[in-house]
Length: 356
Ligand code: NAD
Ligand code: IPM
Ligand code: MN
Image (cartoon, rainbow, N blue to C red; front, side, top):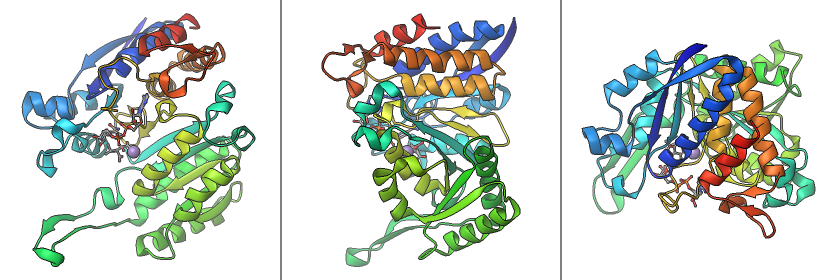
């Protein structure tokens, strides 16, 4: 069999619990593609601050650059809330995205049949939900100049700058178009062009791309309206493409539409090694209890198998096994209802494993 090196970054909080779960599932599934994973554990986030005094050691970056893929749990937590802004745990994720050139984050939101009743929205509103958020990931306000608070009294101020270059917008819209072509052929470009100059450039570029790609239908929505539409009629969306900050916010909203934040996977792709992580954070409130929902990470690992490891049989098998486990009634606390089989992280992992 072929050996593939994957960097595993547990990170903080529930990170270790969910990454271990996903590793077990991947190890079993990739046998179908005649692949063996060589897992290389590296630190990032709070665990790296504790070990090395910084959130993203060069050794982690180098290992990621050499690997076939990176699987990450989550970083951050109250323990590191008072460290200097320059070395916050979250800097590790931002640094990895930048170092690896991961300008595109794909966040597929779909409703599992077995979970239609679990959405906070009415079942009939969510039955057709199947869309992808294409989030720009290395630009915008996340990476603009900023100034921490300075001055005194009412004039004390802090600021962050949103910048987009044409090339950054073009390449992310291109991915949205490619994604839509393989799906229902509809792109919704989300901005705040009625207020922000950077959004006006965004919309201009999106409109040019729309004209040049008649096979795909384009819609343009303001982000506030989009936030509302996601709750009123989430079934209307196919591919949503948007900026770094808007994509962050809308994807948490999109995630709960599907039942729980703990379910949503993501793939970050671009010029270097791709990185796979659930969209949720380190969930400090439930960390260490072994009760986190591992499915967002397991489904991220399925995306990793498909896009980075050439293990499409494994990817299909993992996704089908997750569906089967949910259909059989296995539920972690975040998606539990009376009469279902309540399981912890390990129990859910075993449930998925038995269907692979
Ligand atoms: P969070 O996503 O960690 O948690 C929000 C809520 O969702 C919590 O109640 C949590 O228990 C629940 N939840 C999240 N994942 C779950 C899972 N798999 N199973 C069951 N329940 C789950 O967001 P937060 O509390 O705002 O942030 C906590 C820390 O995580 C912060 O330091 C934040 O910066 C960081 N964070 C990291 C990432 C990342 O590493 N990619 C993403 C988001 C937030
Ligand atoms: C996410 C997270 C990160 C982001 C944080 C932890 C930097 O919320 O991946 O959605 O805002 O991108
Ligand atoms: Mn987020």
